[in-house]
Image (tube, rainbow, N blue to C red; front, side, top):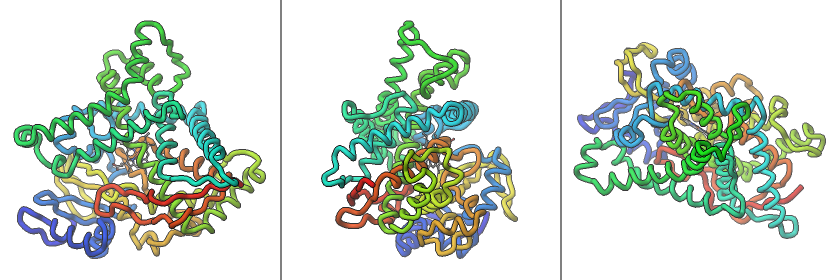
Length: 472
Ligand code: HEM
């Protein structure tokens, strides 16, 4: 195995991980400490299990892209293996997962490239939120809790793309209910539940196991109810599918279901799991990136100003909205979004992958079944790649145009993000058009740009401050 700290019997490197996380104030700085000491590929033992982290681009590319077929399996925690029954996209492996991943990517691509549904839905949502902001303005200023604004906006876009319904004033409660279900489920699943064998949970903690199972089923059933209704209407002839132009993800899935009647991936049960995964994986990630970005702008108004200058130039002084067609020419905005994503690096600890055959990484020969991961957050603070990594400086991507290829906020290889195209479109259109329409300033205290949960697996942005949106 690649080098790492000295391991102790049974507890492995847990004492060192805890100590260096505490000393450096977070898991990511602890990873950077280990990387500097042991190299870009290092092993940490979680109890009796070794984990190999890869924190540079070249090795990640070699392992997860060039030899990607060997690393397509996600390491699944026993409770997820039991509850997901190999359904869905995030906590599943095998042929059904591969088929659904391909279908989802093609469907999103068709929505984006073929007929621009994606851009239309994002802009419809953005325009509706801007109308609300303008209606609430007092003396041209609207005070906004930006955490809530972006959570609702992103939730609306996903819901609209998946089941064709955005959240307006009349059905905002539905959004809050979905948020509540996802938050409850996040609270229910602790590290303890993730590592315990299912028989232990079922035998000694049956109530706890029941609560976890219930939380997952409730989300799935709630998010799947629109699809269920549509399916029933389709069977009874009340709903007619347009095969050539499905209006959302559920339509596309139902078309496929009719064509592939015997395929185990295309069933109503499978659809419910997929909808739930797309919602959960696509919501917090995108909303957190938007919130982190605006928090950065409050500390770096000169960056917001430079983006605006570029956008005004591209849109003839703001006489039209920014569109995805402007992407190639928005060099400064693209560099800024890259720097926002580098700092926002959603996962402090990336999902683990297992290899299905013995492999060689650099000079190390790894057995089949070893656990590996592209440790993205560690890569994004790797000083050998991103000099002065703690600084927020979009210019770094303009000074060295190849640098952007070393940034992997959506992961790398066969398990990289399925929603990357959608997320990139959302980030570009929302950041760009809001900067074009509003001068945005802090209201009261400045939001923090630091991760609010540096000891957890997922990053959380500061949503406690308020912002002022001043129409330009
Ligand atoms: C800025 C926004 C987003 C970021 C930073 C992000 C990041 C990621 C990352 C890091 C992974 C795991 C990669 C790995 O295991 O190595 C992932 C997986 C995934 N993401 Fe995203 N994501 C974003 C938005 C979305 C959206 C909008 C959707 C869908 C609507 C989505 C759906 C998924 C799914 C389904 C997976 C699992 C893919 C698989 O295992 O095959 N994500 N994402």
